[in-house]
Image 1 (cartoon, rainbow, N blue to C red):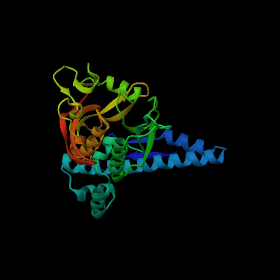
Image 2: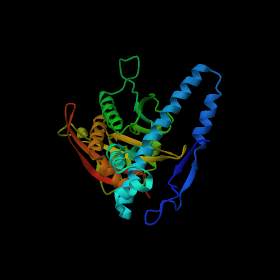
Image 3: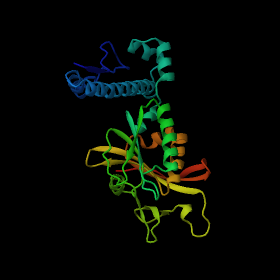
Image 4: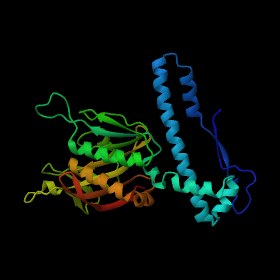
Length: 306
């Protein structure tokens, strides 16, 4: 049986007594998958399933390393325990504690989940093209997001949302996709208690405060002066049908998604400190010079839901 021990070091004594509440966690789901793969008769399917489970194990191992680092730092900051004392209680050297604190993934990795991560992009029908395409801006946003996720030790794969917008997010997923391109995203955003993302009476898509206090419009839709600037909706939203959550990055125009990813890349630690892994929503504004983001900043700060 695959068992993970959380805490549970019998010799621990006050004030560093982690044995209180220590439990054995039975990880039945991976064990069930493991046994099913071992008994799979089809060799090609067995190889495919084994590879998928290896990826899950690897990502959970990375997350456990992050949790251990965070727990060590919390023990020092919240309980006032020296790192030497922590090393003694964990059966490690002082040097190993230093190594863990320097090399394990940062706390803000948890903002995106455990992994592997699916980055979903919408395919769009284009006039004169036989096959649907991905906009260059969406592709750029996905490339930048993949780079950020890879730096956080995530395994990343991309998914193409079909032109009708129907898909089923599985596991940890980020959708670079607005409500216009997918009913899945539209349904998730409709549950946001603070913001809406809908077309106005002129047909331009806008982000609005539900209390009517403010409207976030894209400068690209301005009647007088059109600028290479955009706004984007960013949120972590529950998916009632599956019980999972979905991270949504959706510019009013595709360019806004590039600006939103730029903001995440530069401000992830602060954002994680504010919202953790809770549902939230915010609005990012950005200016662009060709493919270069020259400014990305909050127009509406991150607010948690409930």
